[in-house]
Structure formats: structure tokens, C-alpha cells
Image (cartoon, rainbow, N blue to C red; front, side, top):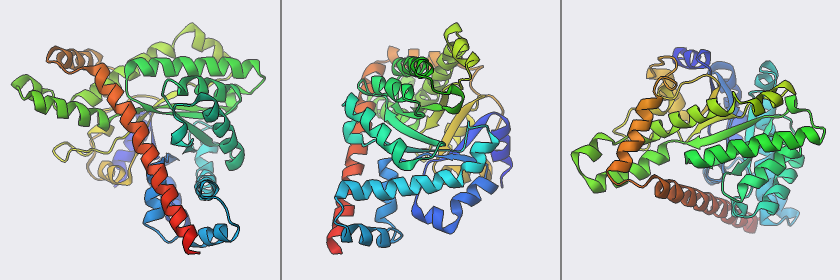
Length: 367
């Protein structure tokens, strides 16, 4: 049941779990996934934390204590989210040590309400880094326009970063630029580049969801032929850009100082449309040096029936570009698609965070 996961690992894909909860930590489930299912990292987001709190009594004692202390709702939410992430960092520490700090990382996101505010994002990133206090932590910062300078400044302070909510190739290019600038400043500030890490979370399935909706509205044979093809094509072209940047002279200078490349991370890899193969956003995006963060259902699907065929990215750049060209030809506006997805992504995380705060406040009020 783990052969495909082993093959994926050997093909250069780091398998991360896109979920966290106190229950996984208490029961030893996360430890089991690391030990037996090749899971070498964890990502979290506001939606994941909101679901964990709403569906479990595992936080009851902590919420009771926080209520007795008359903690504010924001402090309470950060208290247990950072506690879960800190404990997950400890569970993943063996993977961190075994990979010389490349994997074994756990991500926590800055307050999504700050996505359009550069200075407050930087301040929160520093506060979370201090609060969790684990060197295998990633601070998640969204790739909004306001997020780009925050990414550079956070890296310049010696803090490892997971850049999230990337949908467009143009924005991904800007993210890599922000990463390089951040490392150059970190080096100038005297930080050890070999101790730092970063990933760029390029979202996958949501691209198909939005583009397929537009293709179905067009409803021509040419449009139907493109259903379910845009997300994989988009991600493959992102990897092409990654190869270009991380073979440049500018990157080589940083690598010579001990820096590790900012790896592409395929996020949102659970299939939204049941008509599609439930492993396609994994097996069709295999390339050296990438991360794929999966919901547990996708992880189990890959383990059960995933067909790993080695590198499925680098020989398909021309086909991927052809898909985007055909989409443009039939009237799908790529720039509008990615703009809508970024705006929706920020709103969804804001809504989830507010839902989390509402649930925490309701529990505090009961005490």
C-alpha cells in the first residue's frame, strides 16, 4: 500500500500532509504517517484549523484554561494554533534532521486579514516565528502584491517562508524574485543561509475549477476538449520558470553561500471534480525537487492506486503552453482567472479565520 508513495519519493517529490489537528498529535497519527507513509512535512491554513476545532473536543481543556485567564479571542486562537504547529514540528524533527533541514517543515499562516498590509504581515511573521520557536517552521505569507515585499523582509530577517496562494505564472516569477532579494539581504544581515528554507505554494485544482466553469459556459467542442487540462499545464510551466531561475548566475552566487533553492510546492492537489482521476494532481506533476502537499484522502488514493511514471513535467512544456494558447484562443482570459482566484483565496481564508474566531469566542463564552 505504500509502493507508489515510495516511488514518488524516489522520483524527487517530497510528500507533505495538508492537514493538522490536535487529534493527529494526541493519537500518534502524524507520527505514523511520517514513519510509515513517507510524509516529511505538514501544511496548515485557517480552514484546516477551523475544521479541527469545530469537529473535535480535543481543545476543550485548553479553551477552559484560556477562558479562566480571560484571554482575548485572537490570543486564544493563536495559542492553540501555535501549540499544534510547535508539536507537529517536534514530530517532524526526524525528517528535518535526516534531510539536513530541507524537509521536516511545518507551516503556519499569518493572519489572513493582513494579506493586503505589508508591514503588519512582517510584524506577525516575526511574532509567529518567535512564538512557535522551532527552526523547522515555515511562516506562510500570501503572494499578494502587498505580500511580496513582506516575503523579502521576512527572509531578510532570517525567517523561513512558505509563500502561499500563487496562481499565475507572472506572480510566481515575482515570488522567486522576492525570494532571491530576501536571501541576498539575509546574507548581508549576517544570517546563515544554509539554515533557511522556503517553498512557493502554487495552487493547482482551483485553477481547473475556475477555468472548467468558463469552458462549460462556452460549450463548444474545442472548449470541452480542454476540460481538466489547465491546472496541470499551468503548474508544469511554473516548473519551467523554476528551472530557469535556479540555474541563473544570481542563484549560483547564493548557492555558493550555502542557500537552498525555493522549491515549488503543489498545493490544492485534492481533486474537486469526481469525474477526474483522484491522483492526477500528484502523478502528473512529478519532477525533481518539488513538494506535493496532499489532503489525507489524496495521500491514501495515491498509495492505493497511484501510477507513478517518473518525471511527468519537464518533457511536457510545449504541450502545456499549447493548452494555455488554446484557452486564450477560445476566449478564456487567463489574467482574469488568476485575479479572481487570488481574490477568492484571500476571502476564503479570511472567512475561515473569522469562523475560527467565532467558534473560539463561543467556546470561551461557555466557560
